[in-house]
View 1 (cartoon, rainbow, N blue to C red):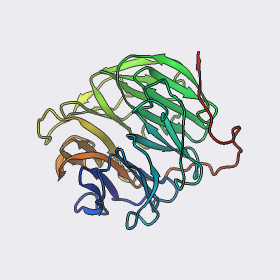
View 2: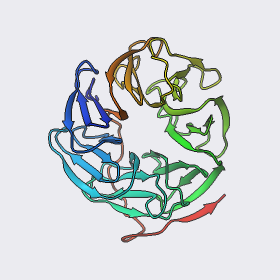
View 3: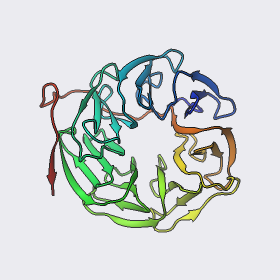
Length: 315
């Protein structure tokens, strides 16, 4: 079971933590602004955070103490785990640093790839089949060899926002790109437009893949209960602003609890997004919940040694 009620919130002032579903927050890191958070899916005491133009920090005791494990002048977008030890971090600043990879649970990191000159905005990993999915302003890509080469599955020329895998059916993927939400039911080979809206964050119900949430520009939340066929706007209790819905998270053990992170507040719903209340105000950037996901331990060897370059393969 996951650590129910544990929330990590990245803000301009640092990292806050709540252990009671957001009733109270404690500042546990105040050295830098925190714009990306990763809670280890096997050991939730391990937490990684990213500070813009500073690097990555790691805690092994649930945020009580921190060690800087990467010094880099980049913007880390998000983290994703391939195995219990192999973790990827994306950089969407382009250039040489499309990805960072750690093979020792975040203790050390290696940058690699001149990745389509625009970095990787959104990354999702299927640890069972060991497939990596990435979206950036050029489109949607898939890697079958741990990120060494990439196949372009969809060409798009708009900002990429988020990619999410349905853990109830891992062939189903949702992607928000530009002003459209796309859905694939065959691991990215084919796509269908399911919502025309600038959705910048997605979340799929942990046990019912027909339910999907989308946080939007101008702070709204869309919800579908029929696999994306129809969407309804859920914003009761959300203060109307021009801010962005930056992240949506579902409490893993109580999925009726949904969190919507905006640029100026964190909202919470206890009824599946029908009603919202603000539980934190401030300049917010990222959110992560303590959520256990069964992923394989590393039982394979990599086909590379040291730094390698990415070769783009177009389908």
